[in-house]
Every structure is written in structure tokens, then in C-alpha cells.
Image (cartoon, rainbow, N blue to C red; front, side, top):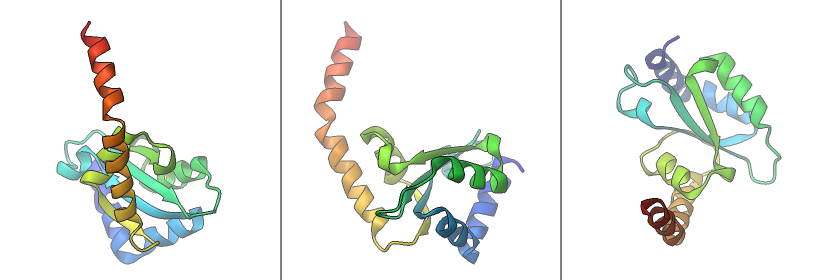
Length: 135
């Protein structure tokens, strides 16, 4: 399965509820497609997926990668747990991301607000990094 076919399969499974069922088994309540596969799945080199576990439930990142990899292809997936992503990665995933599964109402919107706030709050640190690199 190439990247384009995998994106079609992800969207098909999202529409049918099969992806939501898989996410429920894994304890995932938010799954977002982002990155180059949104713009042009045919030319994209991989599929970027961001996910969040149900509140209060310990998640198993390896189980997520294995389950999604088995279904959609190991060599084409980059999986990012939102709970541990930095502010730049959060904003990249959630600014233009496509929600595939949202089992907790408004969780995507809550994460978008969090991502923007963290990005804004950490701007001064990125500015210092750029100044140091410019020397």
C-alpha cells in the first residue's frame, strides 16, 4: 500500500467507524492526520498521525505504532503522541490537521487552544535560539 492508498484507507475507515473502533481498543480518543499527506497524498513520502490517549488511561505508544503499522504500513507512518509533543510540533499537527477520530467531544479544539498558547508562550525561547544560531 502506498501513501495515497493508505490515506484513502484511513479516511474510509474513519467514515465507516472502523478506525474509531481500533482507537477505542488502543485507548486513543483523538487521532489527527497532518503534514504533507494532507496536501498531496500521492507525492507525500509518509503519513503523519498525531494521537492522544483517553484522560486517565495509561497509553501504550508501541501498541499504537504496531496496530496502525499493521493496518496501514510501518514504513509510511510517523506517529506523534500529543501529550509529549513540543509547542512547534503541536501547532504543526493541529493548525491544519484533519480529525480522523474524536471520541471525546471538543478534544481537538481544546488541544488547538493549548497548542497556540504554548507556542505563543515559548516564542521568546525560540527567538533566543535564533539569535544564538545567527552568531
